[in-house]
Structure formats: structure tokens, C-alpha cells
Length: 232
Ligand SMILES: [Zn+2]
Image 1: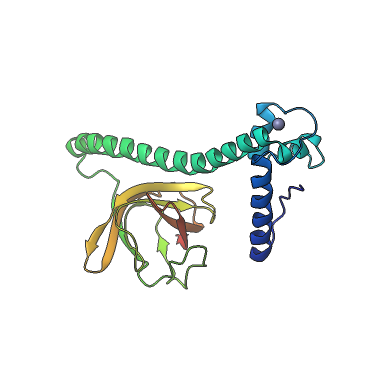
Image 2: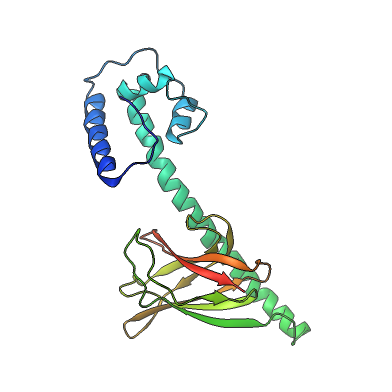
């Protein structure tokens, strides 16, 4: 079997994944004959991460693609990688927010007593996503030019139609893949008629002026939606 990292069209993807499934079924049923010895765990880990250090001509790839033991271990590692990446990101964000919230509560008390007019004005902003498309993978609809100030922001988001209630992770990121997180917070929805709203505090005081993305991720769905945004 030839393993291919290249990106292809959706129809090709479906066809390839079907072929891959058929092949995997045969391998796991012991209907194929692997050549050479089983590679070590480190190699399977690298392969699961699609590490660039592995050449596609490496004979160990051919072995793994035909060995029921290595194949099942590889599938296990790939499944773990995928769910771990998402879970770690979400759990650590939630944990960080809980810590921040706790320290905000204690420091706010101290700050209020010491300096009632401390220079940490919080700017309230509302972003209305009610009419923005929510189909996963689709480009968000034309968004009214959303901009936030480079300040401490109390951000309220009116979530798009049919949004699930629950806990959301809100982040301001540099790109649409969730890289370059500038600020993030968690918020639980509050219903207002048909609408679900979330509010969270974001510290954008150190953010550079420029284009960013606002992302919302539901705790269970875990698909992140990205909306273009400017920090001014
Ligand atoms: Zn093997």
C-alpha cells in the first residue's frame, strides 16, 4: 500500500479512505504478509504524527502497512494523537481560565481597596453573530466589520442561530487554525429568547493592532468556528 500525505479533493479523499479501510480490514484480519521485522514504538509514534523525518521509501512503512500488530498500534496512536491534541488544548484553557478567574476575584478585592480608580478600565463590547452562517467548514458569512480595542474587554457574543447552550471557549487567534492565541476565556451561555449569549473577559492590552480571528468552541462539539476581526 502506498501512503500519501498529499492533499486532494473531497471525492479523492473519500475514495482513498475507502481503499484504506478495505486494506486495513484485510491487514487486521491477518490476510496480508508483512516483510521484515516489526519496527520499534518510536517509529510508529513518528508515523502516527506524520513526522517529516520519515521517508516514504522507508521499508518500515511498507511493513507497518501490512502487519496486523503494527497497523493496530498505529491506528491506536493516531486516534490518541487526535483526541489528545483537542482535549489538552481545551482542558488546559479551561484550567487556566479557572485560575485566572480565581486570581481576578482575589486581586480585584485588593485593588479595589487600595486604588479605587486603578487604570484598568474594562471596555464592554458586543459582537453579534446571530445571522452568520454556522455550517461547519464553511466560510463565515459576511461579517459586519468587527473590531475590538486593544484594552481589557468584557466581550459579549450573541451566538449564531441554532447554537448549542453550554460552556464555550472563546479565543482571539492570529489565524484560522487556532495558532497564535492572543487571549482566551470561557463562558457559559445565557438564553435571551431564541438567542444564546456568552460573556467573557479578554485582556487585549498587549495585543498589536491588526487582523485576527475570533473563535468559539463548544465544550462537546469541539469544532471551532472562526470569524475575522480587527484589533484597533
Ligand atoms: Zn509489525
